[in-house]
Amino acid sequence: MIASIANHLFGGIRYLTIEDRQPVIYIAPSIPLPFDGFLMKTLAQLAHTLEAARLQRRLTYGELADSAGLSPLAVRQALQGKSAPRITSVMALADKLGLEVVVVPKVVAEGLAGAMPAPAPALTVVDRLLEQARRRKDPP
Image (cartoon, rainbow, N blue to C red; front, side, top):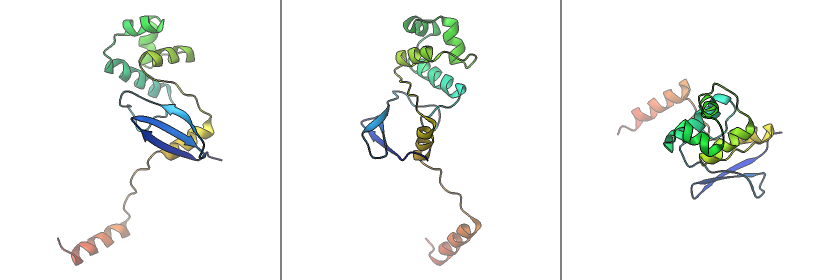
């Protein structure tokens, strides 16, 4: 079963309500996300998001490492997707970059993915022919 998700944006903060209950997941990115939506399922997406936040804040790897209590090499490798950092390291980096890590069950993630806006449907051949007929009937 996929959870029913409602996606609300209020004051620049995204609130998600699961099955008509109080908001239980809170995601408030302060930078534009580098991919559609806000669910990250791969190490590459995570690294790209953290690197984009670092660049947005104009921090060096060393500055970010110092503030997060990590080595500059570990930070550089994590943000370039060359290593799989520990969850505690990811949380520390995200915190220093103004982001929050939220881990959700797979069933919730599937529901969240379903709450994302769907791409516009492609026109079928019949749709195109109908549109052409309408244009011929009602010229501009």
